[in-house]
Amino acid sequence: MRLPEPLLLGITGLVLFVLLWQVAADHGLLNPTILASPSLIASAFVTQWSSGQLPADLKVSLTEYALGFGLSVVVGIAVGIAMGLNRTIEYSLDPFMWFLYSAPLIAIYPLIVVWMGFGFATVVTVAFLLTVVSITVNTVAGVQSVDPVLIRVVRAFGGTTRDVILKVVLPASTPLILAGLRIGLGRALIGVVLGEMFGANAGLGFRMTVYAAHLRTADVFVPLVVFIVIGVASTQLVGLIERHFQAWKA
Image (cartoon, rainbow, N blue to C red; front, top):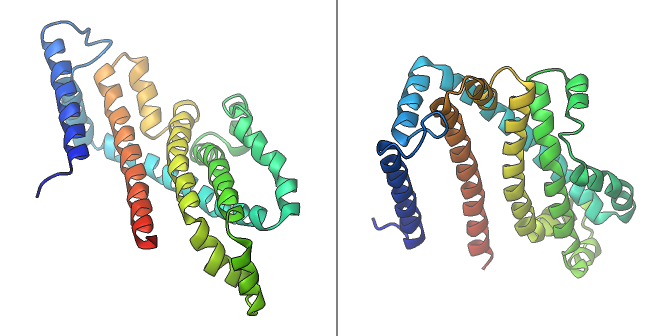
């Protein structure tokens, strides 16, 4: 099976980059304390995985990621639909949305720790707060882009609000909602990393902080690469759903 050209070129570029990185390290051009070579990172990965430490941290981070993102999806889409269909709700909640979008959450992080405690709940909360606004805003835009004639037709035939949402609003606004989910995935992952680095005692982000404090550069790269893989896989999955929906709609 032949790989698509964009994917083939991307893989080729990545492989060449890693090879050049390894060659530079082998020739002493890189200080391993500052930038470990790919071979050292691979060795650190095997050590962390075989010890059971990496799987345990990965489980914690994935759980926090799934919960933070999942809650933001449920709340963001529900609030977005309500704001999109009702101007009173939109005007009432709009200031809070822009506050969450504009406020530097890192600045209020100590308060979140005081409110939620130190650990799992704080990480999930940070991931949720960083994600929910982008999903809500995109959902509002999607709902408000729906042709009002379609809504009136459903109402004219005796359709309830539930019928309007399920049969008109959601199908028509799905592209923008999916775009919001794509943005939200990246922001949720950032929330998990930040939360674990500064307010947790487990997880990949926490482990990165511990390794960095001991100048174990190769070990730092292992959870970093895992985070990158999680982010790429998540966004590609949503992108696949997006393309499938566009093909179905066409």
